Image 1 (cartoon, rainbow, N blue to C red):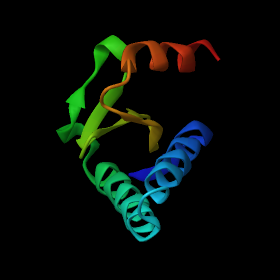
Image 2: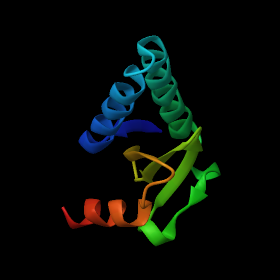
Image 3: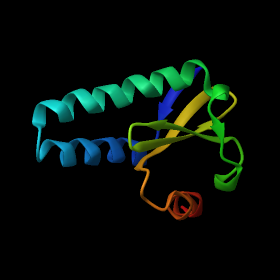
Length: 100
């Protein structure tokens, strides 16, 4: 399927990279590239990932390291909505997204 990345997800990736770069700029670049590659893998077979009905209709997630990639499976694309650290309150953050 086609891959779409929301503006919030782009901001998440940039923030993750900026945080990692504080300690290791080289790893920040490689890790953000790994996140993008994982998003491409998700788009190839989105239905193999965990359904997250508590986050909304057609929402799924994929754990990658300590992060959670939250996405929607739409008719023509897989849309990455957020990339969040697993220690965050995912349900509250995703509820904020739906209220926009």
